[in-house]
Image (cartoon, rainbow, N blue to C red; front, side, top):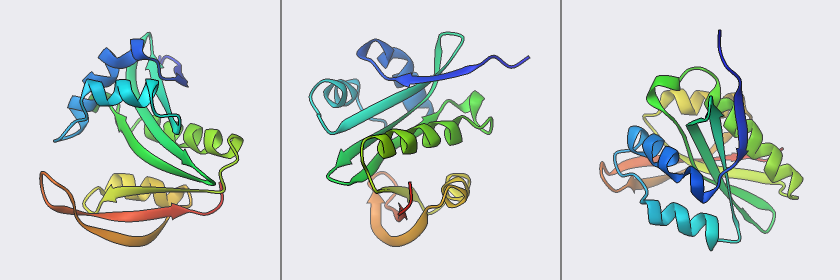
Length: 150
């Protein structure tokens, strides 16, 4: 039987679990210090975690800038992918953005990340451009996606 996934605001106390997901998800992970600064110093930043049985299994973040939400990152631990946690995190980010008065949301995604691109398309995001060589470790391009209706 599946246990419930709880989505709640990220705290500094969550960073051990967040870092575990981060290193499981990205070739060039953010540092713990970067997350600490986002949580304690960036007044535009909002981060959430997905928790199962007291363990962090995913997280997502956004910056709220004027009337736009910019998704900074979304990650789910390897053993919990394809369980709907990424969708749940995005739904909660979109709700948070709406509740904060944002009109639209944007993000970048690797051109090769078909699963994420499919999810974002299902959620109303459309392609708006390409950032060439966006990912420094692979020189891979990023698609710029926008969702105009939150």
